[in-house]
Image 1 (cartoon, rainbow, N blue to C red):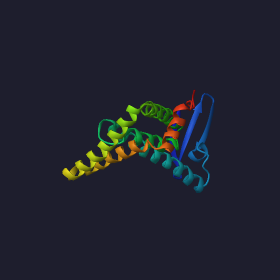
Image 2 (image 1 turned 180 degrees about the horizontal axis):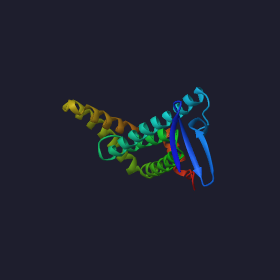
Image 3 (image 1 turned 60 degrees about the horizontal axis):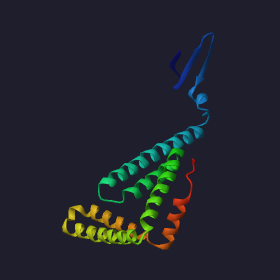
Image 4 (image 1 turned 45 degrees about the vertical axis):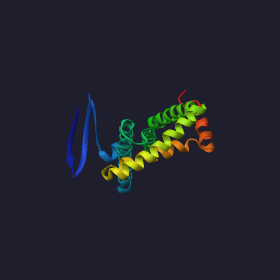
Length: 176
């Protein structure tokens, strides 16, 4: 049974286990003895919560961009990178996602038809994004994101980027 009471503005937990009981303050439970320890603990956890909120927001925006105009897979990867700074599950998901995306890119770039399709879709997205931004000024953000996605698609045809994609596609996953 746990009962809480307040002694001199410090919360105290009284824990009773059968015949034995002890009293512990929050500072001894969390091993926080000085104000510096308290500030460090608050800062560390606030940073973790902030990274979680930011990473999930970016990740959800990327998922939305899979159906809406924009570079959805790239934004999902950015969200996983943000989350991966604090969470190991996000690092593993990032490794799997990059490997899958790299494998798909390698499959498309493996044939002349795939490369020409990538060039045509990249140029089409750039032109379409510019036209959308000019004809419908209220959709300027969508037009810019479509154009950026087209530029990113075209950048995957550059030899250094292709070498990096090939390396990622051939690398075994970390948890395998």
